[in-house]
Amino acid sequence: MNDKNKSFLGVARSALLASIPLLRVAAAVCALALAVYLVYSIIEGTESILTLVACALMCVFLLIFAHLCLNPDTLRSQYAEQTLSIASEMLEDIRDGLTPESAEAICRRLLPETRAMTIAVTDRERVLACVGALAEQFPPGSPIHTPATRYALDHGLVQSFTNATPTFSDSLTAPPIPAGIIAPLKVRGKSVGTLKFYFSSPHAVNRTQYALVSGFAELISTQLATHELERQDELTARAELRALQAQINPHFLFNTLNTIAALTRTEPARARELLRDFAAFYRSTLDNSGSLIPISRELAQTNRYLTFERARFGDDRIIATMDVEEGVEDAPVPAFIIQPLVENAVRHAMKDEGALHIAVRVRSEGGEGICIEVSDDGAGMDRDTAARLFNASLPMPDSQSPQGGGAGVATRNISERIKRFYGPRSSAEVSSTPGEGTTITLHLDLQESMFA
Image (tube, rainbow, N blue to C red; front, side):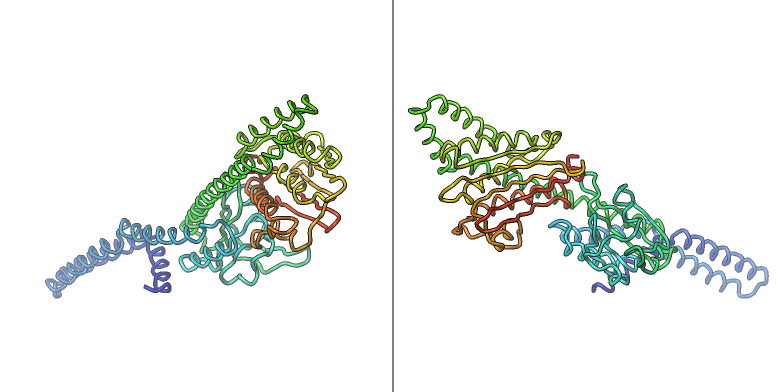
């Protein structure tokens, strides 16, 4: 059966199921009319036997029709089968999360099965896909324009409206939308987007369409939550792998142990202190590999790492400062979000001569988030290499380059984790100039954190 026929049958079944009470009334009226006609024919004595047989056959036909075609169980079974088929196909569409591609696939799959003239999917800020009569009015990437959509996102409630006028700017508006239903898409109780059905008439908005939009929104939300958990498990596994790699990294391990061994002869007290810090460093590496920790603990771990590198290269070769705004020390951050950036600076930015200056700054951003900045005055990198650090669609930086491939692995891991933990408004940025240094800035939106 082709898609056009499937779509027609889907709409026909929906209409038939919704009109069962009306059809029952019609059948009752027909039966009453036949009874009256039968009585009249008998009284008049005109072909009473023939009339009786005809009426009996008509009643049998109506009973068979009502049983086969108007049986609610039969219609609901067919409707449920169709809905489950669509749901199964949608799960395949959104297996990689809420993207413009998956959003468009959802819209195209649902539009023929409903009475809507347009179906759209958004994230919290922009339209991801729009299919139907209003597709040109709301192209992918355009900002959210309707107050009902913003209300659904902010309050997490299904909204219906009539004659809504989208506002593109203070002076530019679009023709009003006759009617619509907007359902939030939720992950961990937070709205991450919306599913929107637009109709050509307010009369098209009924309980059936309302339930349809709500049901499909819940289905999409469930799949998005599943994808989120799978992705978080994957990222946690990467973080644990990162911790394991740090644990058994032969260069770091042997260099640190050799440094401690050398100091036992010349500075035994410092050697003992380094040994204690070394044990604490690796214990923390194992304990915090997949958890959120206070930012103060992450900074302490970073300081331990710098202690080992100063002991190896000399106190005058690595000069680090940490400037933390008061009140943000307890902000929750994923483990290994600052220390790997500082490690990258030491491994890839240090010049042959002179001191490497590293500055870590942590500050609040309007009480709704925090900004973490790690900068150095080292070797820097060209624009192409910098662009590859956080962009997963581009190849990793060349492992043979001065910056090294390891820098790309660490920064991409951090970028992915903060977006998963803190939402799409969080970001990781890099600014670098060859020969002058590099600055990496992390913006963490605490309001959108999945643990807020």
